[in-house]
Amino acid sequence: MDVVFMNSKDTMQRWGRASQLLMPAIKLARGDYSINDLQSMTECGKVITALVVENEKPITAIAFEFAHYPQTLTVNIIAIGGRSLKKVWYAFSKQFQEWCRMAGASKIEVTCGSAMARMLSGIGFAKAYEVVEFDLMEVSHG
Image (tube, rainbow, N blue to C red; front, side):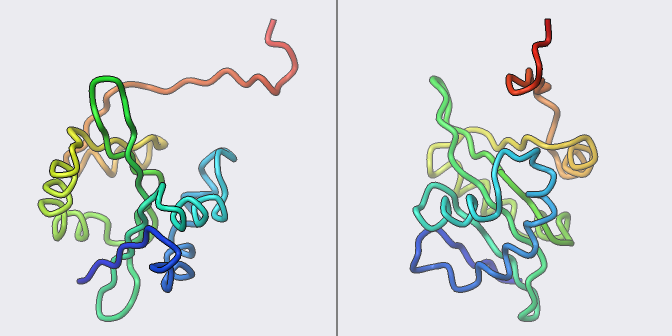
């Protein structure tokens, strides 16, 4: 397995393959961003998109960014798509965790639905808190 990292216009040669894998996750993002937004954020370096390739076939894509909080720096995984997530995690997690620490991050976080949360709990992620929303675009909520 190999990983290709994309984080600038010069590194986007495999974006088409990554976007195909990420599209199902983007569809679940409640309209917060589109695949074109993710591409633009990757091209300008705000987001890093990793494409995992096995036997020259893309199997998993992960888009992540740094989230700056007053007391911590966190790596926020924006979207995950493809297959073999556990296999990919076990193959690269030690390197990825070390890279995150070297970049100054103390945590990796993912905002996701319950099905993804269950899958991620199987590789060591733990529920930190719940996200709730108040939709300001809806008719008055009283």
